[in-house]
Length: 321
Image 1 (tube, rainbow, N blue to C red):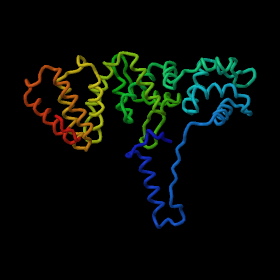
Image 2 (image 1 turned 135 degrees about the vertical axis):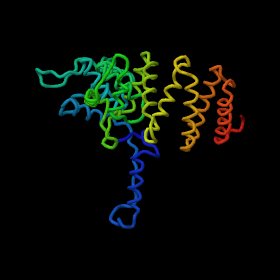
Image 3 (image 1 turned 180 degrees about the vertical axis):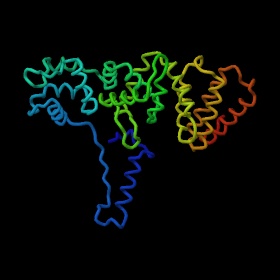
Image 4 (image 1 turned 90 degrees about the vertical axis):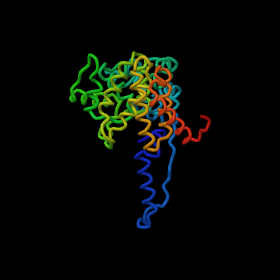
């Protein structure tokens, strides 16, 4: 299953639906309906959430969880992912607990108190869950959050081995499985690797990282990706590395190297038809050049960047430069 904001024109699901539509329109398949219906699925109704919670806590009658369901729905507005995270949060805080004497799930606080024990947004809920996980899983999620592509265990091993931490591939595999068991990651049968179970988990991981000093980590991730950027299939490493380096304070990077990297990746972006990304990287290079103190001292490089920016702006329909 995919959320609508996760599916673009190049997504595998989009291509699948195009193939289905084409097959249905093929004259050789006369027994199949010609049209393909598309449905937008929105948040669930209070009744559906009540039924879901009743099944989750093994209540035969929905009325038995009406108060709990009302409090959860008021907080989540029927977003099923938020509902699941809210229930987990109540369990972590021992507000919703399994009574081993009565053999049933119970809560002993009022509807108003239930609401107070749930976070106001799903990202805060997920961050609360992350704090309960081991440091190794926290670091795994943070590293994966900075990289949009699914990663092989071999790359994750190098990315995770930073500072005082050192890992074997078998350990990384175990951590991925543990994170999956916690509902933070899912295994993609298509990519044969793990990915985030929801984009809000990635967002929570990024915010979790932002609460700490992450500059050294970003430098490490960038260097690892640059080392792995060999061949067209690993070209994405260059894009991620340059974006991470551009996000760092100027005093944390080698400005001369970063200027050249921006120019290099901008040329790749242009060759791939991504003129917007090319323009973005050239302006990053120009900004770095202006603040470095080497503008026009490196005459050839400065002239190349200015000329490239002019061509890029012209390609985007901007003629003011």
